[in-house]
Amino acid sequence: MPRKKPLIDLPELPAALAFVRSGKHFVLTSHVNCDGDGVAACLALQAILRSRGKSASVVLPDPPNSQYNFLEGWEGIETASSLPAAKTERLIVLDCPALTRIGKIEEYITEGTQVLVIDHHQDSLPFGHVNLITTKSSSTSELIYHLGMALGFQFTPAVAEQIYMGILFDTGGFRYALTTPTTLEVGAQLVRAGARLDLVADRLFNNQSLPVLKLLGRALESLQLYCEDQVAIVHLSHANLDGGMDHIDVVNYGLMVQSVEVSVAIKEDTPRKYRISLRSRQRVDVRQIAAAFGGGGHTRASGCRLEGDVNQVRSQLLAEIEKHL
Ligand SMILES: [Mn+2]
Image (cartoon, rainbow, N blue to C red; front, side):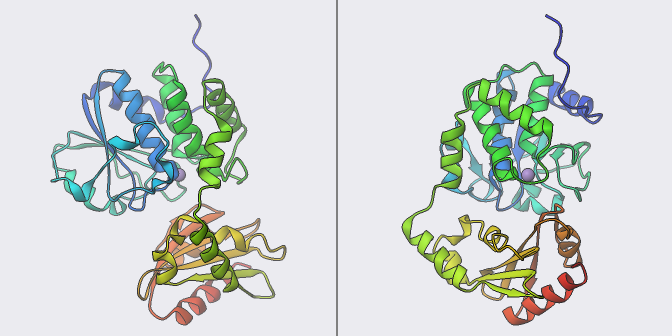
């Protein structure tokens, strides 16, 4: 049978394929506070590697959100905190823009460790020996689809579902601008391979407890508009986050307000230490705003960290955002 033409042209792919083909034992990981794309990409790549007779373990810096527990392979995910650091000959870092973001997994790297990076962030650093980094892909999970195809992998319903969930997570259900025609084509192929699109969407987007939903209500009460109603800011206190609010992408709610161009969520991770999420509708490159505070991400979605008094943090952010409006 003639080989199908790939859906995407990735000049970086052959080196990544060689990396995967020549190794025998792999450890797969992602960034701290691993998100849906990272978890899904790790699990799908694990299945692909195992189908080729290789050993592959998924070891994350910290425990992932149990929201993804319907994915096959979930029970096998290990966390670095529960393991003695082991030497690894081949480490694959997925959906992670910098080596500084893999937390305890850094201890797995010794002089002999070969590292492959697979990522789609704009500001991703090529910190691997081999780097499959491209912004042409909606998500790292989409990249794993292309990698699997190039390896001749027969997509099972379970792996199709993993990848489909990762794509759905990063594209907000095929809605964000990083969704490309290829993303939609990949989505169609995954549904053909058996991904249950209704189930995945339901697990991903309708998966809150009543107390968390009520907390969201209270968090939204704190939402305020600035800069002639073009900026929305919501603040989640440490107590709110502890109650389970962390699993709701509260920042997206600000963009539901018609006039808002930039939406910000200030999340107090630990007292006086904040994780900032930034989203924009159309004009503003929030990656630049995040970068001003040492963070990064994508044009429409990015993040950074700040410390101190919440009012001060809010003013700092507003001063930077104003420059971009
Ligand atoms: Mn991603």
